Amino acid sequence: MERDSPRELAERTQAELKAKGIVESELLNVTPRDRPAALHAHAYPLLDMEHWASRTHYLEVGGRIVCVNLATEDIERDADLFDRIGQSFRAVEHAVGVVLAYDDTTEEALFKSILVEVFNYVPPEATRRYVRIRAQRECVVALVDRSRVGEIEAALTSRAESAGSPLQYRIVG
Image 1 (cartoon, rainbow, N blue to C red):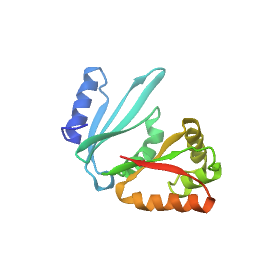
Image 2: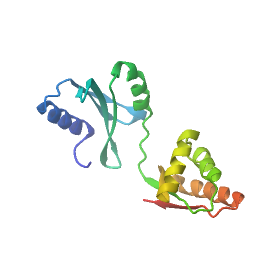
Image 3: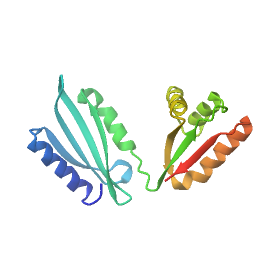
Image 4: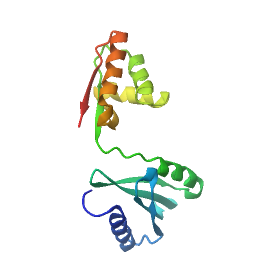
């Protein structure tokens, strides 16, 4: 979203929710990873849940306001986790996407090792992402800072050559 500051956007969202009857709400100024942000915490009934709690962080990234939302039906149980996640946000100013393509000859093991070793996936998520790559014929596997493109391309090329694979990938953005 463009315009406004993170705080102004959070205030506008809070007012819109208040007009809809959602009044259990709080705005805080926070600094995840030394980046000023606004945190809008609110709770409301949702479907059959008595309380649905949400925390939305509004941050400025590259001249735009981005919103990162975390939600749960048990805010007390998840509060510490939400705090850790909120403090771990890392905004990437100049992001590009890395797309891996399925080519019928590259081994599943190579895809999974790339996902784990180059992009820091945990093995179960690497398996799920591999299934998506295969089903869709290609898939964005990571958003990275543009400054890392050379390093990632070198890692992908090296691994493909070592495996004798025609691994296909592209960088978008």
